[in-house]
Image (cartoon, rainbow, N blue to C red; front, top):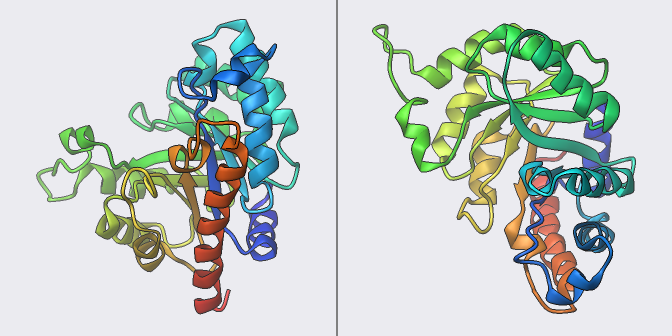
Length: 272
């Protein structure tokens, strides 16, 4: 998917919502466990209920890989079921070098045909460049995350006073462009989103942490907005586990609609 196609979908749906498909067999409604493929049955219902409100879907691959070949098949079927106009994100957080990185890229871009994959930048350009060789595919690079452990390294200052996340942004922005690279920026550090935006003004951000993790959508828009909207805001638990009863899909749709309506108001205020 191109950047222009993504922007057009945001305008059409009046939404920049990404639904995270972190499908945990211990949390889905118990009646689905009787299905031949409970994970896909759950995902299918969630997608049906939210597809009018979401512009992107983000399966976290760990929730599928842990089930071996059967989990990979559930992931493949889920990806094929997602509407073709939605942006798809493999939340895999890969990060290796050389042929290994190249084969990771082939896995997610050729075999599974995701639009994008999350990548860790720690090993530098040769861990990221193989993903950038694919046309109309995206790298979503970890930049400033919202987990507690992020403070261990990301905010560390070098002797020149530059923090590690700033170095990552300045350096990595030369590897690709705003047409094939996005950044993960956590919603629970609102001012941090603004700092990242100053360094990469034209890139899209994937923003986790809104909803169950306490991030504010209004703050994200205040600090992260750019002329193209520039935001994909992810909600996982707050939507997909809105209910553990037979009405789980209906409740998920209601939660997605609430977020979309708030996003529509933001888009209106921004005259987007």
